[in-house]
Amino acid sequence: MSDKIDTLVQQTGQSSKAPLSKAPAGATAALVLADGTIFWGKGLGATGAVAAEVCFNTSMTGYQEILTDPSYAGQIIAFTFPHIGNVGTNDEDMETPTPAARGAVFREDVTHPSSWRATKHFDAWLKSMGLIAISGVDTRALTHRIRDLGAPEGVIAHLPEGATSSQFPDGVIDPEALRHMAANWPGLEGMDLAKEVTCRQTYQWDETIWTLGEGYGRQEAPHFNVVAVDFGAKQNILRCLASEGCAVTVVPAAASAEEILAHKPDGVFLSNGPGDPAATGVYAVPMVQKLLESGLPIFGICLGHQILALALGAKTRKMHLGHRGANHPVKDLLTGQVEITSQNHGFEVITDSLPDGIEVSHVSLFDGTNEGLRLKDRPVFSVQ
Image (cartoon, rainbow, N blue to C red):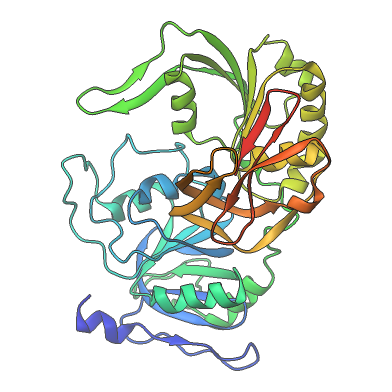
């Protein structure tokens, strides 16, 4: 980053009662936390202001997939890797056509794309997706703050210099107003966000995984019939199912067990998704419990793992930090192997709440939290 930009970026951490600093010359964006901490920087992507939970992701690659992962609904993502956007974007690396994330935070400016697969500059892509972003932030300081104090509520705001809008009637970013906006955002606990990102009607999926020189393929001779319950499913998970020989029927999150069983599936997949599993579980748990009675094979991942645990009588809770990144070590207790995994979740299954007959299959080697379970007497299992 140039010295000029460095001088435009300031961070303060005043108490919530102290007046916040005004924007330094040239700053066009700010990230304001509910406690009054403010990071100034350069705006990218869409303009405006939006409140969300602020989290961080440690992945070095895959920023387009991360920003289009429906599990990030209601969140602003701070990337710990400094060079985000330098390989551009394309139409293939999408996990959903409409991103549910609310914003992004970067250390460095976005450079010109350097990948042969790039079809659009990252800044232009952010604009087209309606995502607000800020660069020039001390992401190390922000990450340390989240690590020590937990994921805060915050507001990300982008107002080009000299511009005005309904959100910025005076033509300036008002940190006090943004702090108030952040402090009044209710947080993810208790939020059912699956209903916001799920599909609106049942559809068929047959696209298989991407291969070099060929792109995505089609599953034309499936051997299995799988129903995928869409709590916010990533498209690449559906592609993986199709690549394994499955004809995939995707149903909305609120689908009933009767609607699912009417498709005569060989198995049911409970997808990933955002928000509080206990809130989504109000309608999802009864559905899963009826599916368990049917004897069908069931597999869950992420939110699907948590919903399955709730249906089995366990409990979930919000984590201090959550797990978000591509370098999370998980031990498979059944084989003893350690796997380096990609994760994105802010809630966990409470291991001590699991009833008898349920076996813990995986644990995190970072913090010992639950990463998987299976039933000993039925073909039912899930991973975080």
